[in-house]
Image 1 (spheres, rainbow, N blue to C red):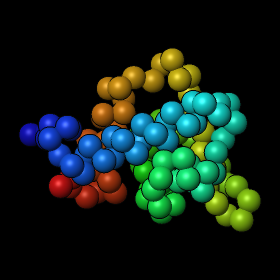
Image 2 (tube, rainbow, N blue to C red; image 1 turned 90 degrees about the vertical axis):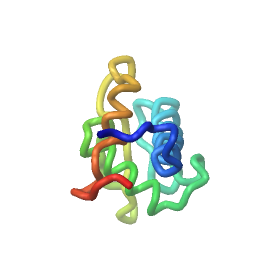
Image 3 (tube, rainbow, N blue to C red; image 1 turned 90 degrees about the horizontal axis):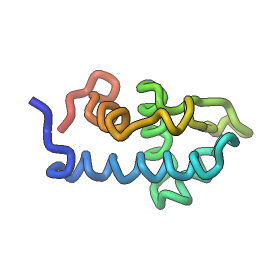
Image 4 (cartoon, helix red, strand yellow; image 1 turned 60 degrees about the vertical axis):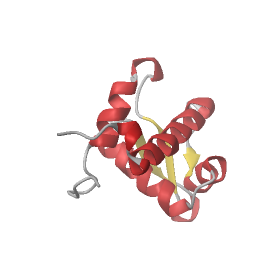
Length: 102
């Protein structure tokens, strides 16, 4: 049984972070953004942003590329007009690295 996304503080936080990341990447499109840039815009720690970006890559919403100093760089994986909220919700409701959602 799936959780209600908005009733779960964890899932709600992940929705807010992922939406902020996607909005910034859309703003910069087609140019990629570094993890540090996204963390600054989102107001979250770099490791938290990187973890979310990797999750979104695994679910086909982002593409990753190496940046300077080994920092990850991220960009949208496809046409933003083809991306739906259902795609984002599906990614957020999927377990991260084999872990069950809390």
